Structure formats: C-alpha cells, structure tokens
Length: 307
Image (cartoon, rainbow, N blue to C red; front, top):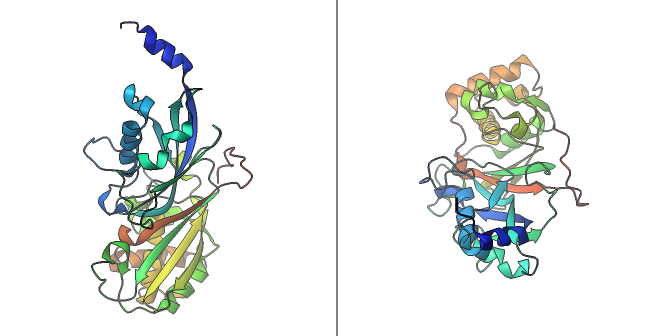
C-alpha cells in the first residue's frame, strides 16, 4: 500500500460527530429498514446512507460511507412517522457541522408522510453515548383498520380494509390484552417465522426478553370509518404488532372470543391463537406505522437494563 501523507494528515485531523435523525417514510416501496446483502435491494437504511455519503463533503471526497444505526427494523411495507437513527459523521475542528445541512442530504428518501415543504428528517447533535436502539425506553406503533371492505386508491397503501366489523369488539379485546405480560413465543403458534423466537435467527440482544408487557389503546375517527390500534412496548419482536392486530380482528369476526384474551398465561390463550391461524391472515404491513420512540428526557443515554 502506497503511503499518502495528505490522507494521513487528514485522518489525524478528523473527528467523528454523532447525530440523531428522526425520519418519516412511506414504506410501500422499500424492503424494510435494514440494509440487506443484495446491493440491488432498496431499503431505507441503504437509501439514507447513500444520501449522506453523496452529500457530505468529507465522506464523499474520501469515499467513506458513514455508519448509520436505526432504532427499529421496520419490515417490508411498514411505514414510519417517528423512526430514529444515529449516524457518525466525519468533521474537522474548523468545519461548522451545522453548515452540512443534514436535512437536505436526505432528499432522495421519499417522504410523503411529511407536510408539503417540510424536510424529511429532524436532526440534532448528540454525544457519543447516545445509541438509537439501545438508549430507547419504549416504542409505539399504530395500526390503521378501515371498517369497509375496500379502501380508496388513495388510502389503500396505508390501511387494512377489514370490512364492516364492530369497532367495540376490537376495542374490548384490546382492553383485555393491554398490560398483560405475554410470552411472545406463543405468538409463533400462529406464524412460526413471524417472531423468530425458536430459530437461530432470534437476536436476543436486539429483541430482549421473550416476555413482553404490551399496552394497547384504540381510537375511532369522527366518521366511524377508521379504527386506529396503538401498541406500546419496550421492544417489539419481528411482526409482533401485526400478530396482535390479527388476533383482535379475529375477535370481531367471531373466530375467538374476547374472553380468550383475558389471561395471556392460560391454555385458552394459546388455543385461541391456534384457531386464528387457519381463519385470519396475518395483518398486512401497509396498515402499520412506527409512530414514536421514547428516550430519557434528561439526556442520560446509558443503555437501559435489558427487559
């Protein structure tokens, strides 16, 4: 390797600055958040990394991709209104990082959920102890159900049209399940691959404990046409939110009873999930939004104890 004095001097002057990004995106045309091995696959992570690389003067000049870490690995087709990531960007002591205009670097990421004229991301400097995933206290997802058999072409990519179901039954099922400690390995009774709880792919460092205490709320819009199911937990397993929504829809369709959700530790709960398997499809990704991720308000970013 040929020694390059100029490059060596540049490397010695550079410092890494950590930035927090809050990103919104329409997930319809992305294969989820996480970058995959196939370079031709379009993911949110890959799109943002490429935008930062191309727009940042130091990373672009020296062909060094920035390291981007997201909080939640949203699945293919899942949307985000409040995804959070951190990125370490090269800087020089005499370069004002604010002039990098990070928001403009993200223009290549489609962001129709933002108000017209707004940038697709909010950014701020954070210290290096902040970690987008490990510093998070809890996450909130929202699933939008359309109480009609067919959605308009303008809404179809953002809702699950479940037909004329009783919103009250779904809401009551949510109230029964909310706050209970659920052994999420039971969810694999329905869709074995969905939570990856009993496979070599299960990542305990990412998902935490298999026992989750999930809090659920529902709200009906003014026209009584769209029911939003909000699910909050310290961490979600892969497709966990969609499995729970499927079970609530199963209540409204009479496949299982609300009483089956009263005790998540009982045999009747596991039996109910088995009944759901053959009768209700897994809730599609297009109705799901990553709505909010909560962090310590005092700026103490140390990693919380694993749940």
